[in-house]
Length: 397
Image 1 (cartoon, rainbow, N blue to C red):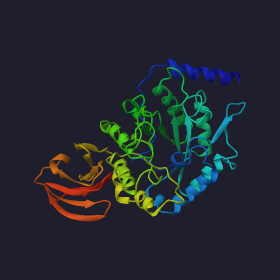
Image 2: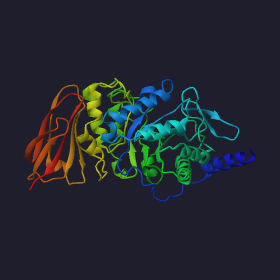
Image 3: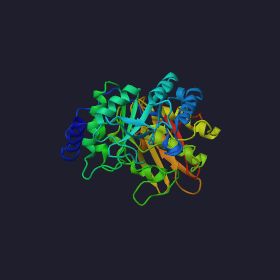
């Protein structure tokens, strides 16, 4: 126990007193395109999550087309743990997960999927379960032994003056020392501008507060629905790229707070941002409309484009916006977004997306899955309220 106390003191000194040092570029070979998968929190939170839900979700993802579309990670968020034993080892909630985490990870791996888990950089998680502070290397070794492939680390119940960069650097180093490649998801809600420092530390970092299942609602302390979070992403796209991604939080598609049109716009804009696509709905019982949205491979291809460039908002006229994303093949993905309460026509000039207006280009509608022919100089479409028209524009000789 004396050794554990010394480790605890050492960790506290590191987190509180150590000035952030420039780290080596993160090179764990993971997340070369934005991670895709499912996370338990948005639908099940703490009360509803258990082993049965996770197993059924993995079963569905392996058989309903999600795995084939690129969804890999099955991630348990908060509330899988209850405490620590006398040696400081994390204790699994046996009521929720009677088979244990190793058996659950093995089950998910047998489905051809990957397994993720959650912790916190503070003394407790957001739901009051034990955090990892002072136990980073111990926990990382345990995660590796269980077969964890993805770790999300939250930022609740941190110490006064605890430094985020130092805290997450400590866990990055612990994961590396574990000997297992584990994707590292930083979750300090954009509170310390992680896009400025996290590229060498995490594979992805939350750039926003928590998402809410609504179109345009806002919280007093920041963040809220899909549109407020989208606005927070406008000027930080250049910090994102292969292996290190801005994360505007998990998807709310299919959770009921958005209409099917809004779900489609939400999914489209996250794809335009090159954001991680982590579904957060009831996979076993989702509607046909939700499944159609989550499994649109042409939209997913925009998110997974190997160039890894995030879209830019190139025009805003009140509630009408144009977003453009350069793709690896030289084409552009273009989203015509209507945030207003009535349908509206939106036109994009080629000069607004980096092409000369004299250019002849083919246009394909990615939701209608339909070629629209060749256009010169511009393209226009009627866009529904709270909706998007998403096209791919390819120059032609």
